[in-house]
Every structure is written in C-alpha cells, then in structure tokens.
Image 1 (cartoon, rainbow, N blue to C red):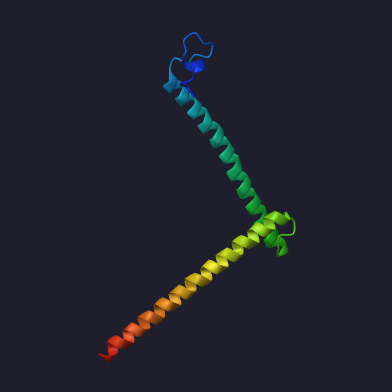
Image 2: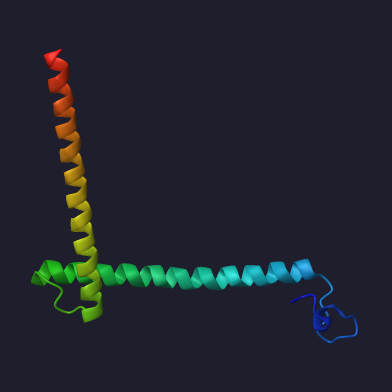
Length: 108
C-alpha cells in the first residue's frame, strides 16, 4: 500500500517520507484500539458469567438469562461432562491394565 504513487511520489499531497514510522504508528494505534476492545469484551463476558452463576445459585436454574446464553452454557456443561466421563474411562482402563500386569508379574 505504501508503494503506491499516492504515498511514494514526492509531489503527492499524501506523500509519506518515512514508511517505517507510518507503519509503526498505525500498528500502535491498532494495538491501543484492540486492547481497549478486548478489555471491554473480557469484562462483559465475566459479568455475564457471574450474573448467570448468581441466577443459578439463587433460583436453581438460569431464570433471567437469555435463551442463547442458556444454550451455550448447557452445551459447555455437556461437553465438560463428556470430557469427565472420558477421563474416568481412561483411568479405569489404565487401572485394569496395571492390575493385569501386576497379576502376571506375581505368577512368575
């Protein structure tokens, strides 16, 4: 973009003498804007989760939450439950394998 005649020709009113400085300033501004956005996004998501947790604690379920947030929360809960079951099954298989190995070693 900086190689265009609009920015690189000295007679242009949009001439950029130092391309590196212009790029660094643009990156700095992008960093500041994105940092501010992500800070607000982080605070908002934490607040939503906190409010949902308080709703569940007070009412036993998310009474006041939006249906899309409820669906997302339920999907996350189901995924966590599946991961926990898979972890438990893996541990049971490992224990069974270790028990069989110990039984074989004790017969020798």
